[in-house]
Length: 488
Image 1 (cartoon, rainbow, N blue to C red):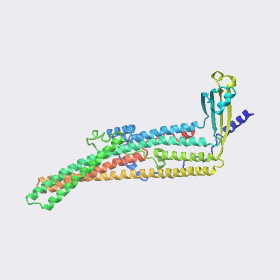
Image 2 (image 1 turned 180 degrees about the vertical axis):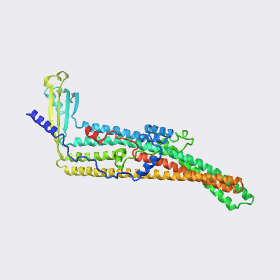
Image 3 (image 1 turned 90 degrees about the vertical axis):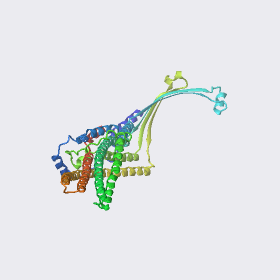
Image 4 (image 1 turned 60 degrees about the horizontal axis):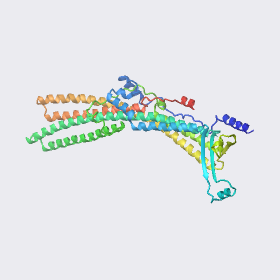
């Protein structure tokens, strides 16, 4: 009869194994426009320029081997990425633990004890009075098993949440790698831009010094007024003052790059000490649509998986309304001597059907459910906000890229015109038509435009980096939603 009752309980649990209390998760629908506002301008830009090699390794499309090498090395050494990889290990362990909770657990135990009772105790006196020895031995060996029957799916909801957290951790690694790659590229471009601006500033110092020397000579001859000399001195001091500021920014960028590489500040000063050209912003040929961001951006995958985990925890909290059933058993031997431990009379067995029900604790259960629902609402709002901000990132990056490139073209044309003007002023000076002051003034205007052009080229390349980053940087999810259902 007991066997039949146990079999009936196991059958009932197996029939109910497919049902779990709590809401089923459905990925929320997010309204998105059909195309990016800046997509048309980016498409025209891509059509007018050379095609890239694709966005799976977008840093290689800048055509700078040092940049590409730094990004690859950073992805291997960066400590932020190392932290996210460690979180995957933790999440995987949590998933294994949640999976193990669904299965029966077994234990093996054994003990051997020797006891000598004091004859001054009550028990010792009684044993002595009846002529029984006060020395006893006890030996025991048992094999036990227990299983919590997950009738209402609380444990399965816990595993579901653990699986979602595991997927979020995997996507978190991709998000960290994308961020690090973009930060390294952005910092490298900034370094090259600052180096070019420092070179231009030093040329400005030389040109302005020549102007001061010329005016000083004219002042000594009584040709120029003291006001002109003082004004030229002030401009020279202003130009010289820009060099330390630029050098501070360059030192900071070099230190930041070293930390991104997982090394001590200053490690890459020797490698990058020789100035090089600012990387050219490549064309972006695969921009997709706002809806594609849900699969292309790993940070959105992280937010969505955390939302799914919070939904599963609602079911786990609701399951506390229902009773918890468990089965446990033990079989083993116990004897007072090792010789009799394996005899038939030493055999012992135990079977327990357990019940735990928080019947008078529903107020606390209500609070736990409300807390879980509140966390789910927070995760939903966070996911929707992340989607909106992702679209904002793309639009801002596209706008910066297109407009900075227009600025770059305008300044390039201005540089050409000022270069011709500088040549004309030099020719006129040699012909005695204009003074040296006018020649040096033309040089100053040309150098100022070159500084602005260096800034525009730097910002254009940085906007391209921001565009690749905002689009997801070529990351593709390794485990889709269909695989997720099968894995569960």
